[in-house]
Image (cartoon, rainbow, N blue to C red):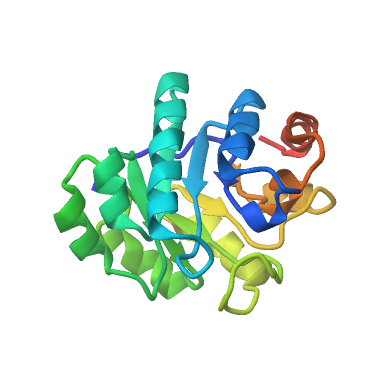
Length: 212
């Protein structure tokens, strides 16, 4: 496990289906221009050819490396290795963290989605570097997502997590300040950012609204 410090502020995730016709690469470029310091590539194989996913990750790795931005890939450990991403993010139903660590080695970042205090405690034990806490609110962005955990679990993570965490799930411009007040210093909004006509403007507005 690395002594990883998750960047404070906004955590960017790709979601091409909500990006108003723009490619993942275009959106990533805009997120970086807006000042986001960490990007997670998230795409499902049944929605895009695997070779295309690989090529996109190659290009995003190049862009993020040039800009000094952390680049993580959701689920695809093999692609993360091939493009030399900074790490991966996995869910509770994906490859277990110890297996991912065996593949990636000691120096890569591994994030793990968690939905309960028990999963939060286990994440540190099994070697995750940071955790996702959520979904805070109901969300339609991710398929097969669990029910919203609300602020009870976020409050627990803020008080007890030994790992840095990012709050995620249904967070919008109108509720980001409340999420921040409950202790989240890293917050992910997916559709609110990738679906904005002016990504730079919404990033500035959201960043100002966060209480960090």
